[in-house]
Amino acid sequence: MKTAKIIPIAILFLITVTIVSASHTSSISMTPDTWAKNTEKTVSISVTNNGPDNIVKVELLVPKDSNNVPIYSIREITTPQGWTYTTTGVPGYITKITWVATDSGIASGSSLSLFGIDVKSPETSGDYDWSWITTDSKSITYSGTLKTTVGKAPLAYFVISGVPSSSNAGSSFKINVKAYGDDNQIKTDYTGTIHFTSTDPKAILPSDYTFSASDYGSKDFTITYKTAGEQSFTIKDSVSGISKDSIKTLVKPGNAIEITITPQDKKINVGEKVEFKVLAKDEFGNEIDVTNKASITIDKKAGGSWNESIYTSENEGTWVVIASYNSLIAGTTLIVSKVTEVTPKENVTEEVPEVLPEISLSAPESITIAPGANDTTIITVNNNGNIEIKGVEIEASGVPSDWVSVYPLQNDIPAKGSKDYLVIIFVPKNESGTKVIEFKAKAGELTAVKNTSLIISTAPTGIFAMPKNLLQLGVIIIAVAAVVIIGWELWFKKPKSK
Image (cartoon, rainbow, N blue to C red):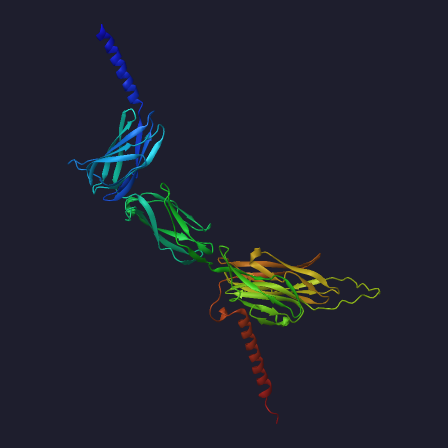
């Protein structure tokens, strides 16, 4: 009868112990868990208590090879405050480390990551399991394993080479990217993906690239900057986040495609000075001051003098200022006025002249320009009336608006007078044929129209390839020579009368 009562009690005790034992759970992790062969690392070990009672002991068993020799060589062991440790084995061949709490240990629901060991990995790559055991304050244990991998070193950094210290906008250059492991060797097994970014918003960068096994951790790429100034780029591994910035490259503006001259339509008095500035712009919108390299001229009738880009005015009037740089031309107007004293008007009745406004326009019948070149011509507007016409403008149609520039933008033409307008015509490359430009002079309701044929043809060679002004000068010289010869024949070689 007593035996029958004892058995259920013993079974109940075993069930209770089993339930309590099952309630103790924990986990252990090691960081890092991957490193290269024959490499020494400082490893951090973190213990998490998922059970109801404090963990007071942690045991870590080093994996062994087939000869029962520890695979990893333990060099140094660190211990958090409130713990002590003991080892099994001898230095360099430690097979087990045991940490014991001297105070309350690791509380339920908390972690401790201050355990640490200095480990040297073996010369053989592979995956190795470490065994561990945790014991709580009720002497209940929980065990498990954690895996470490020995092989190629993990990615640690990138090295970028080939980046120039300076470059022109739009010019491409080749760079090389190498991936290195934390053993400071090229990571020949790197198969990660890198992403490019740049301080230049207009830069042409490589697309995201995934290294292949055949790259052996090294790859060439092409970069093109377009924005002037100091620029750089960055590469970043898409998984680890490891990144590398390139050195800075001073990007210079590319070849100029247009120039501007300032100030535009400046008004000054006779004897005053004005400083002009010439800016060149490349196809990417970069600007560079080319004032010191450009040629700046003004109508000869304007008189005055130049000191580099500073002009001192002499004669009053509206004058055309031309800037040229390489084969590019830009213009503006300078309005020079004479300072006059203002005298009070007498109380007299002024006669109002009869209003007879009339304008006419003269322009060349045709202009021949080669594709990609520019030329200039003069258009004259005549005021045939007996009153001044103000604000006379020239419009050009029949070709794209950016082909034709007219200076000045406006002119006031006195009665029975005339004004010249400088017209700059630019023909883009790959254009051909003949086009008709309609020049229209406008002032309020007054208009005058003149059509000019624009002949686009390949530039001639030989003597006919001379600039137009030189060719015209040659024609004049030949004509004068012909007149002299004819005169000599008619007058100086005349037979004497008997």
